[in-house]
Image (cartoon, rainbow, N blue to C red; front, side, top):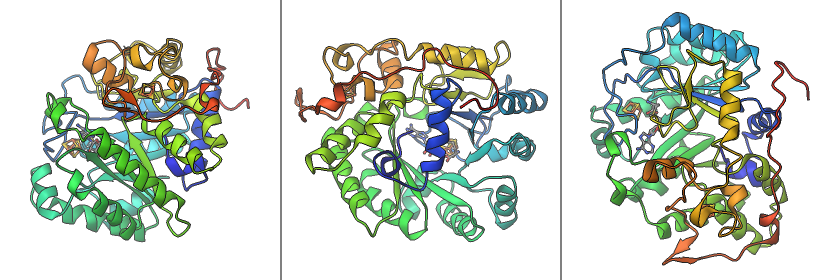
Length: 398
Ligand SMILES: C[S@@+](CC[C@H](N)C(=O)[O-])C[C@H]1O[C@@H](n2cnc3c(N)ncnc32)[C@H](O)[C@@H]1O
Ligand code: SF4
Ligand code: SF4
């Protein structure tokens, strides 16, 4: 999680960032993304989950799901993202959500919005959902072709309007690829027009139905162009939209350096990055798949370190924190990259490309024709304290 405005300045999600940061400092899960089902009522052509109408036979049962949420409450998980597949097609979706709310966990729902009408929007709000996250990819025809169900884009837009009227915040998400690139600036404007607080732009993950689509990723030059545009927008006092960039951690040192070049103080962001780093793997960020598998990242559904059927969340987070103790290798190693502690490179891309989660991230946008594009700022080199001996007591001790 690296919300650009909140990280470097102060933005709408600062409170959530603070809670996650505090939980990670104490060695607890900072947040959990749980794909409660692999089933979906859409068939997006890029879906890294390859979600469709089928339910995994080993999906957590209703009883297991409720017990898991209670366990999250007991160890003080601050934030839970209910995702999928399409989480709202799971028959006990509302019971899971209600239990999370009872446990004092802040729930966010990551949904394609096709099942949200006014009644559902009110029910979400009544159950503590302050934000939902939903996806748009471009104009009507393009979006509908991408999700393979006609009329979807209009339903998403209608649902966003209803949610905003009911006082629920909306994060607009998109997957950036050569296909969606022509629409990215229009999508940012759409996020503003629909009063969304945040836009999440994720680099294309080449797994699931996108497996083998490496050529469909946008170029480093395009990412740098977009990063510069976003910084101009964040620095415009009349603009309020928050940005989150997924699966491209190198954009954060890139942005920090560009801000430093402009003489802007980025101390706050750098201090946080020394603890959290731009790639959240091993930093308290936990993912659970629909069968209870515990994963360092939701984008690598086959990188499973255990299962909730055989280990507690307290044990699981200790396993995840171990991943933070090992240095990244190659171009991302401390010898070769001064940004390694605040960035680490995308560990999931390393896993997918080399089968080694500590291998280098070959999608680093600081590279142009084999050369590094930015000079390092001294503050980037400082070592980062690691929550290697975390306090796992339930409740709050700090
Ligand atoms: C897997 S979906 C689950 C939630 C919900 N069904 C939805 O689509 O919003 C979560 C997000 O992952 C994004 N996504 C799916 N496949 C992706 C890929 N290959 N690369 C990057 N993002 C992807 C989707 O666009 C969506 O915003
Ligand atoms: S991206 Fe979301 S809506 Fe699309 S198929 Fe995957 S899970 Fe379903
Ligand atoms: S080389 Fe790796 S660690 Fe360094 S900035 Fe690039 S992606 Fe991040």
